[in-house]
Figure 1 (cartoon, rainbow, N blue to C red):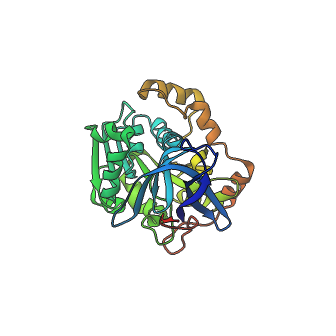
Figure 2 (cartoon, rainbow, N blue to C red; figure 1 turned 60 degrees about the vertical axis):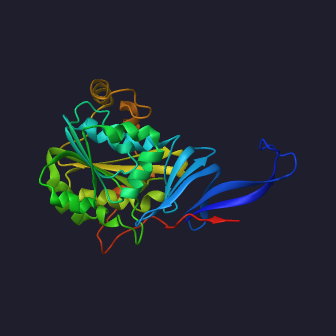
Figure 3 (cartoon, rainbow, N blue to C red; figure 1 turned 90 degrees about the vertical axis):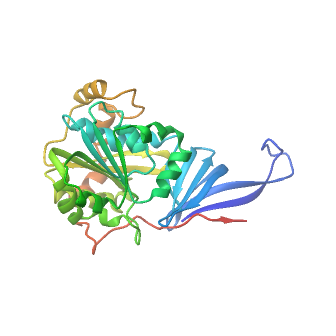
Length: 330
């Protein structure tokens, strides 16, 4: 549940505590039953709603502009590059020559932005179910406007499963930039073994790579969905690589899982060379050594992944804790 609350405090007109009353504004999200994540806001820039979800753009004090959907923080201006570079660059760099890419979700535009930095990419399909989220992000997230205008981008408003099943072409890389699997939510079916096996894998070209965001991957939180998404992909693909990175605005380490029927691991020097040859501009987060570190998980997490037996199915799903819609109260 993501709440926006207002409280009285003492300050002068510049926000210094010298007397007089002013209202401070805070965003609060319940991460677990007994754990909440809270930070101060400068302002609420915009609120809206689509037929699928509530949307907010907040100006936060610690993290800059932050996109919140259904009361869940999706990305923040100050550190979204960690998430999106981690999602995009490892699979594209692991592929020998990625030309055609399909994004499931990604309406924010940041995933497309990072993909389109790759010189090899000739066609990018971004399929998001919610047109109002896409239009909202086009209007309010200036950093991604150039990506939305790139002629290589084909924007499709549809359910990702239906769109992949409808299309006949194959893709070098398919990327799952989906909302977290939440009970009753629209996305959890796109983390299942049947979806990976019968929808995603048939749409990959020879040597193709699939990657998905896989939820919290912290020392305690990784057993929510990260470990079982990893184990589920192991039932479908020959080579599966889990990796993670700390994202400050998420208050946790986050996980991704990359999968293929072809070997995936490149050494740090090979990754750095491909970054130099293929990517326009400088990465802020990912390079060869960073990815080597990201894919070297802690002992406790490795043990959990090695011993995980749960396979994600529609009838036997696991979910991220909680679900909620942001609201105001005095």
